Image 1 (cartoon, rainbow, N blue to C red):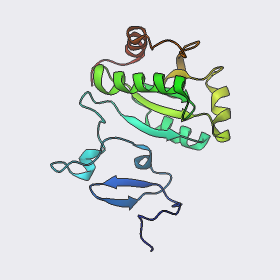
Image 2: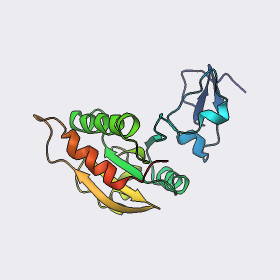
Image 3: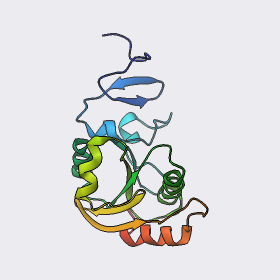
Image 4: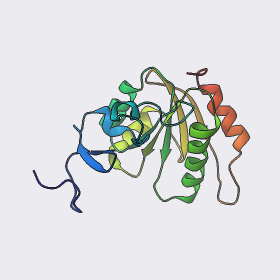
Length: 177
């Protein structure tokens, strides 16, 4: 097997463990977890728990319908917010940044998040499936079914209404872990 840390594209996703890369099966939910990173005083198995101190997880961006289905099956128990976004768009980046900060740092309720990158053609069916008509849009999902939507008309000259967004997130979250 050739070295894992090369500049050429790798056919299998990689999961970071300490200072080395380990190949994962592409169908493994481990390959979808973005946080947490392994820490010195925790084992690799322990590092695949919650992403933050409040117990919430942030998953790697979804780029196909198959990845979304795997994520929904894995995240069956906890509420999930799907962030339908476009990479590099200022409006989307504002909403994504606010969402990540609120879910991972500010709320003490149970909810996970995942970005669905809509600039990939493979995610267009997912937009129809979850009733997304504009980008960016947040969709709250429980047990694979959409239960609520949050979208902002235009943020080009405005900032995110943090209070309103946090209230929407907490309304769709479960009680503490």
